[in-house]
Image (tube, rainbow, N blue to C red; front, side):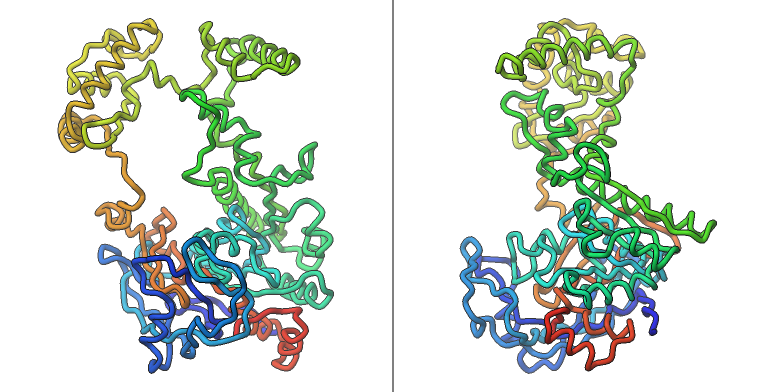
Length: 545
């Protein structure tokens, strides 16, 4: 049996030809796929790889990967799927060829470009979908692991959400960097045999199935560890493998709701509860915890020679992130908590709003442990300026005194070294807040930044995400490397925020196409070309052609 090859940093994995895919016809700063194809019909090949901004370090050469010139998108059949304002996208179309418009990229990549990764030689089978599990796999790939994403014939469902091309979405691209893709029907015996062969050689398996599904597909920990006792099996679920919620389905929003995040974040602002929408926060945290647990298990295996199972969940991760709200100093917090819960229970029994019960209790002087005291701490807050918004962030009285001096306000709470927001009554604190808000509104953000920075006060403007792609600090840190995607062209994607002095920490290739590496994967496992072709023709394996 042929072992999996190591994946050197300097060369992208071989790329098979891919079904021709269409992009949305929405106006875009990027050239359309059809235009790129038309410009490049005479070109013999394309390439895929990464390059970094000029501020990055360590140069390397990405070798070109042959791809035949593509047929135009208009030649593909209509499927009825049409994104907002765009042309129809085609999924699972007949095999065609890819555009040939890419040349080898010579560039510099940050985070250790030209070096091998710390996890080089570690082989990972990634069965996960959506966000949390794939993000864990991407973190391992960034650190040099050879991660093969095992997808069902239709692909990871995250590919199908707001597609920008058939089988490609922003969500999928953002959490699957640096992986290979194989597409296998695990509901068939032959499909399961393929992954069992691979599991015998793997170091890590990542799974995100609901409890019971992995066992039905014969890719659960018990089955695979019997084949390979050294296997580290990382499992992420919505609520964990046991307990009354274990069988429940769930995504990030459900976890935010059921771990108190939504209620807690909403208590300082009027209106109904709101989720954190800027990031799938429990998804990402759960993925990070899963990657961390896997690496720890690999280290323990180095000592013991044995693999093990690593469990994380969105629910547990949502709890773990609340380091302040879920700290209870029982002598202070137990009795008030029980009083609040009694009011909530009574409101529910009577069919009244729980929000009213909580608001009434807080109006009587109750402060939830760890709650943001925005109204009584004006030195750690967001403010509207004449032309935008900015923040100041002072966590000791020395900095608060400096901020008060810049603002021209007096606050008797700053006369001592310790901070006690309750030294001002509600009316007095509200009056001070109004004076501070009026002061901020009198000048522009730039004017205030100059004044606060001169006084040593931590501060910053509220930035749009669109501004960050060319931000000088982002460029200086190499946090926005460029990738060449075989269908979508140039991508700029945020890097892993870790630097190592002797290892690269961001994978050199973008997310894979569906089934892009199926044939080479079968070859590595000892399947002959005829066997592989038979598996593909019988739809046990899907491969890009």
